[in-house]
Image 1 (cartoon, protein in one colour):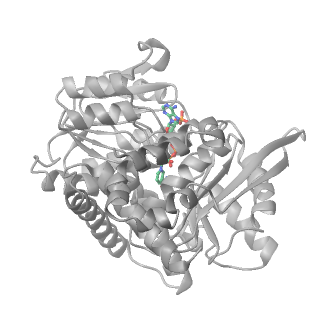
Image 2: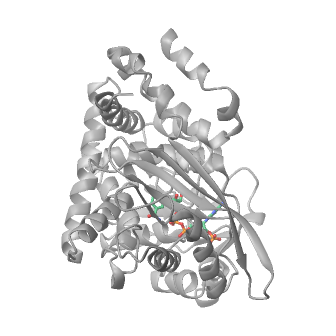
Image 3: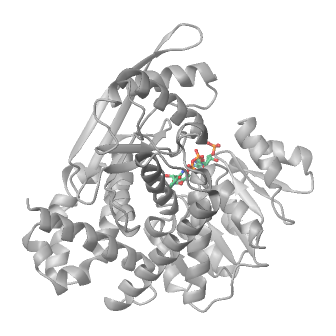
Amino acid sequence: MNENIAKEVKKFERGDCAENGVFYQAMEEVIYSIAPLLESDEIYTRYAILERLVVPDRVIKFKVTWLDDNNNIQVNTGYRVQFNNALGPYKGGLRFHPTVTEGILKFLGFEQILKNALTGLPIGGGKGGSDFDPKGKSDFEVMKFCSSFMTELHKYIGPRIDVPAGDIGVGSREIGYLFGEYKKITSSYEGVLTGKPFMFGGSLMRPEATGYGAVYFTETMLEMERKEPLTGKICTVSGAGNVALHAIEKLQQIGAVAVSCTDSKGTIYDSRGVDLELLKDIKLNRRASLEEYVKTHPEAQYIPVAEYPEGAHAVWDIPCYAAFPCATQNELNETDAHNLITNGCVSVTEGANMPSTPEAIVAIQSHGLCFAPAKAANAGGVAVSEFEMSQNASMSRWSFAKVDTKLKETMQQICKRVALTAKDYGVEGNYVDGANIAGFKKVADAMIAEGI
Ligand code: NDP
């Protein structure tokens, strides 16, 4: 790294950034990655793109009060981080989870800018959410929370301004309640949220898009790197939510054997392949713990988090050809990476946002495994969200087949663009650097053209 880049990195190690661990982690990766670009063209430094890109346009923080089923008043904090709209309206999910903080949303929003740029679609980056936990709440409580959240959020969003979607804890139920409240307040039936149920403007395939897209990306990457395809291969998947369920579904459709899933309490290992119908029933219908799985399939293994040695995760110790971390940030650490390598894993695809720690990525890449970073591999969700915006704007409906074809093409294009960019900048095979450079360049060029 040359002296100027070292200075850039140093600059961001202070104050606010240092307090926001995951935000700094995401930023640091990008700054290191784009070093060849900054070295090859001084325009990005002259226009202070980095300094401008790492500060959100605005962070909106608000109080959300709601009544629980016992008529007690509850108070949560809501956020919307509108990070960058150089390429189009702010776009990114809402996360409802007790761990949500401004720092986490800044990390997710920052990643979203470059991810959205990689899709080639006209969307900027943002993220939002609340420390509200939908788990264990009744439908009415979730509805009341969503109504109160939207009472404040509606002031800042719009189909040409900022278009939120779902993320952890926010599925079509929550999006439906949020949309209903927005409509009530504004009397306007418009595509202000994506991930809506199909019956009122949602796109077919939005629920499947992120998981399917991650598998499409992996197929293309393996082909480009001249590795064997996924068909017939053992794959491990973490998570048991939207992304994980649909990654498992697509893997099964192409003839791969997905043998695992996880939730916050434990891991299921079913060597014959996960029973997806049962899994959907447990997680989507009953919203129950994965422990339920072994009641129907006693031959499968349930490994509670508490019973696995600290510092590693059971799911990454299962021998596999390809691994798909699809749960949450930093769920695959250096020890996990070494377990994957020792067990002969060939490819790791990030379905979740930043699930691998920086040390894990170094280990994976230095041992020659293919590594697909989140901002490229999980961009399928936001791509189909943009397709939903297009359908809403033209009051049209696309068929499942049309969305699927466009999603597959988009993921293949992203993969090829990332690989080509890496080659152009002398880091062939490094999909992390390729994604960061390609995404950054697209946003930076727009920022330069739009003036300061
Ligand atoms: P969901 O809320 O649908 O599911 C999250 C899953 O991960 C749940 O099964 C949850 O378990 C599990 N989980 C959460 N925290 C942990 C943890 N600390 N350890 C183990 N498991 C955990 O979320 P999504 O599937 O939508 O999102 C998953 C990831 O994908 C996130 O990083 C999200 O930002 C990213 N993503 C999602 C997109 C989308 O379209 N939904 C688009 C792009 C990225 P439990 O059931 O116990 O809570």
